[in-house]
Image (cartoon, rainbow, N blue to C red; front, side):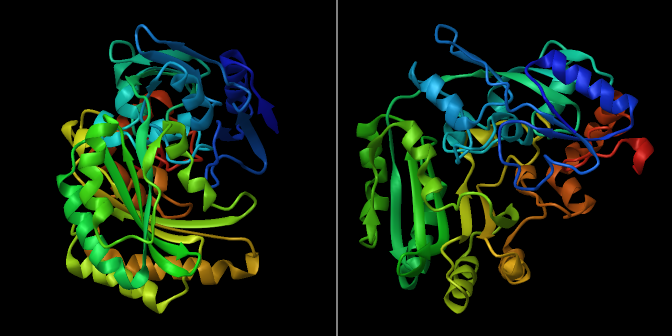
Length: 413
């Protein structure tokens, strides 16, 4: 069954119906749920995709948005007022799922994670009650929602802090594979000393003429200052392509969509955080690409963290991994189901090649289906036991379990 909700009352009714009839529950908000957890067989899908209300308060620099919105829709509304908050790097990502998992994006070094900008959230818990959560009201649940995923209820709306943001300096630099190692070494040194206004991600992947390196840049400060800050990066090694220019923030938010295939397609990902961004790590990554299939839809992304993210305490929110300066993500897409095993094995092989340079932790929004409870615990780190206690209070029967699940004590902990 699918319950297409138009408001919080519908959500409450759907949750109550599912609990009363002991149904498996899946929650679909606005986005794409690459892990596949937003659908289920022989159960109830609570669909929030019709819930797209949004109200921007430019004087307070806040916005309240319903959970069916995507970041593309959200950004269009807030940018009308020259405002933004940290959002996903693909416009079709849903605001709710990204926020609940933490939320990394092009503004994260300047303004923190998406969940760091969350002011309040309305959530329907397992008994059907609609609760308001904030630092002052149901504060334990509010803490858990900021990084704990969809484990605690159905979030129906979210209130965010906004920041002034006009045009940004954004675009890509591209290098052939035979220059990728030296470019990655320069990128590493640049990214570790860059000001908070810079987010620069480096991705090994397919280019039109074979594998190569792409550096995606967003500078969210003054354009004039950004030209000076980015000048060393743009001048290094005479890139094949340099598209960096003053553009609307929404343009940067859509940069990846030119290379990501539309649905339907298959997808597999493995991710962690870099603990050692050494020359050996760089050589291992580039050598793997030189020896394997340079598919245009297979990427190994090094994402730029640090800055404001690391100035929030590891236990201040449920999002635990505050200290890493870079994440590492292997992502591969394909269309033919007969090619699934080959593509998945390629991803696993690359991840194993890089594993000596990776931490045990992982960004919860990058966990794939079936990675197991060890990886789920690694995503939440030392915050896991506190999350279990909150799960015991708000969802003791684990009604909301189609996610990177935090199991209540009665269900195995």
